[in-house]
Amino acid sequence: MFAPPDDNPPPGTVEHLDIPAESSPTRAHPIRVRSRPMAAGVRIAQHTHAWAQLACASHGVLRIAASGSTWLVPPSRAIWLPPSVTHEVVIVEDAHLRTLYVDPSVVPAGLDTCRVVEVSPLLREVVLALDDTAISRERERLLGTLAIDEITRSQPLPLSVPMPIDKRLLALCEAVLADPAAADSLESWAEQAGASTRTIARLFKRELGVSFSQWRQQVVLAHAIPLLSQGRPLAQVAQTLGYHSQSAFSAMFRRAFGESPRAFFARDGEQ
Image (tube, rainbow, N blue to C red; front, side, top):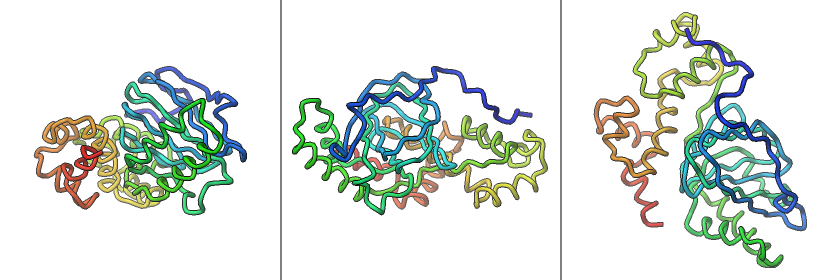
């Protein structure tokens, strides 16, 4: 039986948030960018700040936990977090983290929930241009307005993995998230959690609003996007995530995103 998670941090370096004053947004400078390399395994402890943020990496993968969900964010994608949302960041692979901090005074009404979005070529270049210590105030204002417009237009992606509160179910979900290829049945997972299959199935519906199989599919997709974005062969990704055939994995991917993995990532090749 796996143990329920406790309050001890996972292995790795824990970094407490310390944002320099020059990176903090204000009404006078509502859009600020902070850029830095981050090593795999670093965890930025749970924290909250008054402004919104868009976090992305030019390379590497981020894991973000916020609002009862977990997201795996690969390059070419970014996560938007509204103001005052408590969140935690884990660096899954060595990454260059670039974060756009946005003062609440310029956050549009429609950007009030966490979401993973596509990073358009224009948005990527705007963020890079904003990451300039010598930028003028007028250029900062114009680029900031353009960045917000691009974020608003970005297509949200269904990559969130909802996480429960019940400790037995949370332990089970953390185990599946850590090993999405495990082919164990719900009965097997329930036994490891020390609960009946009926109890675990009921908890999934009550706390997460989905069945175990539906939730597990979200886990697979969350892991698949970073692997595919690295250019790994589709057959290898399918096998890594527990699928016996490439076609079965592709069919699941198409049902979730409305297009094949090849078509989904063809846009990145055009950027």
